[in-house]
Length: 469
Ligand SMILES: Nc1nc2c(ncn2[C@@H]2O[C@H](COP(=O)(O)OP(=O)(O)O)[C@@H](O)[C@H]2O)c(=O)[nH]1
Ligand SMILES: [Mg+2]
Image (cartoon, rainbow, N blue to C red; front, side, top):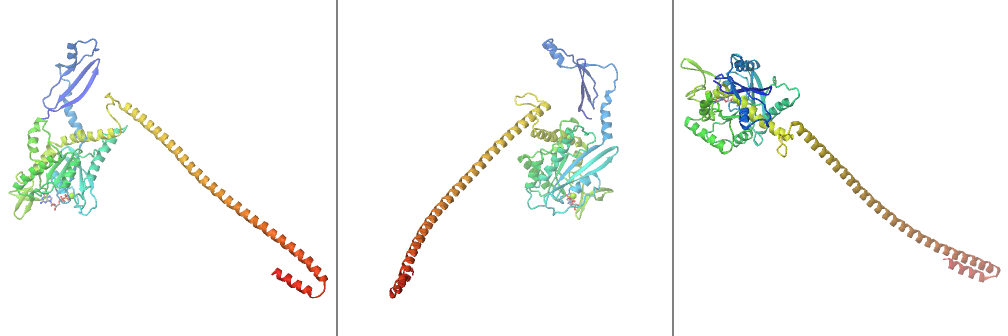
């Protein structure tokens, strides 16, 4: 019988605190009262009395003993949800094992070995056993272990788990939350399928389990355990466990704090990893039809504890620890994700001087910080802009100076050319003038010669012509 105490609430009334506790096994009831005084009024003795609640015997039946029943009824009405993640290579027997575990044909098609990436496929089913409804989600790793480069094979799995946590966190952070009818898709357990090599864990297995162990409850299983002999299996189990321990991989341990199941859970922890065989085929053994795998040399019975650990896994996973797996997911793994995420967003419970901080204060501080940062950025941008403008101005000025120098140079060259041409012109003009003078003189001379007779005239004409040549 469950002995867990369920905390039902506090109630302050006229300075009295009533602490109500109920246990689902041995029923107890007490009312404890606590009287409020101001600290200056109370002595040490009174303070001690004040701190320890007083037990009273009730004089009659009240009825809160039915609270556990109320809880059970409500849970049954609400239904349960459970999400299993199966990680393992294609063809290792994941779908067969899930079918065998829930005694249902989930009709998961055989998947190809040629996918370029690992992807996760989630399928949700509604199951019912007597009056208990279970919304079961099976998440399969499609293409796991099929790529040549397996370095990043675990990343899609990590991303999927985080995405489910994130979805829950977003729902929780909403102003109008509806967690009551929220479809919780957080992964409650990861069945990690190990190949029955008899050797050791593959690097991919270690890497994947290591990256998942803080996010999900891992239960490792040795798949297709009928492929390994009994003595080899024992050695293999020991080897696997020592490898997990030496690599610091935290696998799920069945809880031993509840004394009603502590013994069985402790002994089952010693059987990990479970060596399982899956099959939906029915074979006649004696006069009974049992789930088994039939070989030319004999029959492996799935539910025979001498043949494999299938029953142990089913007992532990479904009958005994399903609620603990759900609880651990919420209180440990999700809590860690939520804490990291809120810290990343800048929220904290205590300030730099260890003083408690409310959400409002953190928000104000963050807003302040954000505005400060924005102003600083604006100032930086302004300064950068001014700097750039100055640089551009300097470049433009330099270009202007160069242009001016070029202009001055051209002007000078032009001036010199002009002077040279003017000088040439002056010389030419002088020459023209000299020529004109000569011409005039020669004309005068010619006229004089015309006036004198004979040969002298021809002689002078010849001389003049030679002068012009
Ligand atoms: N020997 C042996 N074969 C199995 C076992 N479980 C499944 N198989 C076979 O392995 C093949 C692949 O199984 P399946 O469940 O589709 O693998 P999955 O790809 O991981 O889902 C099928 O032919 C199954 O019959 C087992 O426990 N032992
Ligand atoms: Mg499959």
